[in-house]
Structures are given as C-alpha cells and as structure tokens.
Length: 159
Image 1 (cartoon, rainbow, N blue to C red):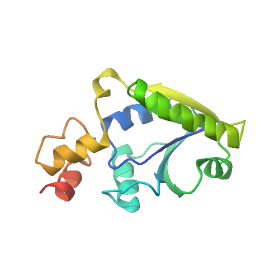
Image 2: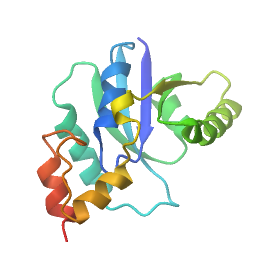
Image 3: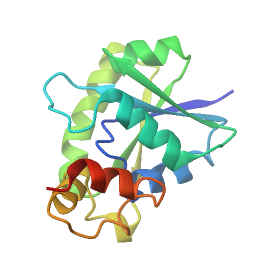
C-alpha cells in the first residue's frame, strides 16, 4: 500500500489545501493529512480545532484520514510506514523553503521523497493567513474555504 503524508498547519484549511488533498488522494492508496505543530508558530485555531475543521472539510473518504503530530515529520513517516511527503506550491518563493525542508528530511532518511504539487491557478493567491485576515474584518471567504467550515471560521475570527 502506497501512503502519502500531506503535512501542514491548516490554520485554517483553505480551498488551496483541498485542491492538493483531492489531487493527491487520486495517486496513492492512502493519504494522511497531517496537522503539524510548529513550536515557532502561534496558531489562531487550536490543534483540535484544526483537526476538526479538516475532518468536516474532507468528509467521508475511504483513502483520506486526518491525524496530528508534534515532533519530527520523519518520525511520523516511520510510524505510519510512509515514504512520500506531499507539499503544495503556490509560487517560486514556496519552493525555496519547501526544498530546504525536503532536503533536510531526505538527510534524516534517504528513503523519504517529497512530491511537490503546484496548486491550481485559481488558488495560487490563497493562504490561511489571507483567509484569517479577511474573516477578522468581515470579508467574504465563502469562495476561499470549503463551505462546510466557512461559518465556523467567521464566528471564531470576526471582530
């Protein structure tokens, strides 16, 4: 069984993330969407909230599951017997930082590969931070996040 892991903060999940989830789930047997904890980040949504928002957005799919992890991604990869990390890219600037992480992970375990997927053109401008900013000030986010979670995000963030 081929297992891919798609790690991220997902603070909150956006349609850009969903695009990568939808496409990646078609090219593997099992896709784990991994809500990661980065100790250098301050999150708006708690770990539990981010996991729940992802579960609501993804719905019931046979080959996609949501998990969370604190610690090294490579350790999680070993735990679930996965060899491929999925990373979404919006622009060249994303590639620079993601390539460094891919090389670091490869240095820790040379059997782990990172597969980069370009986001769809209509999501290339989209980020979780942009969604949070719009929601805080009452902006329309309906076209930027899955419909199942738009109201939850607005209620949490609207000033």
